[in-house]
Length: 159
Image (cartoon, rainbow, N blue to C red; front, side, top):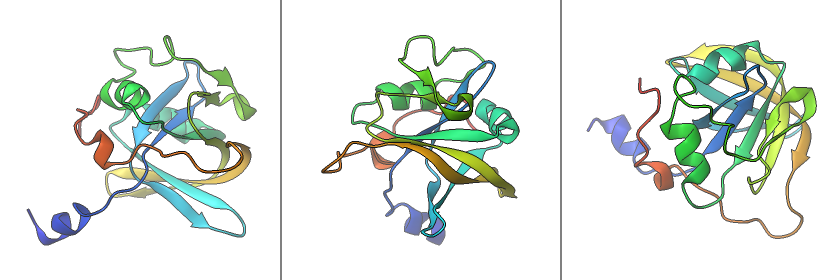
């Protein structure tokens, strides 16, 4: 293991399902994402260029970003399968949110963000989002799935 890999092995952070409108709707598990501005509110997600959702995300006016509940149901579905072989939305509850973005109500919190910018960085494309709608429970934050929790999922579209 190299020095940088030793550093990143110590990190743990939330994972997300990012959804894009279709047809057909697309979605994938994302490990690289985070808030990047407070005022104005901005969030960035990085999507692998080998992922099927990548093309839909590049074409989208807006994307959905969902925190995940514990348990590997949504993480396994959106991270361990590819839309090339599986309709990820066939057996999961979802509805059309703003801009037609698929929203997963099972998520403990989500937002839909309008895509403001795109940039290719390494093997991923970063998409800068401005939140336009948020679904989050009032009160105390629920625990959410993290990178270490999903480390055993084999990528549906490996690099």
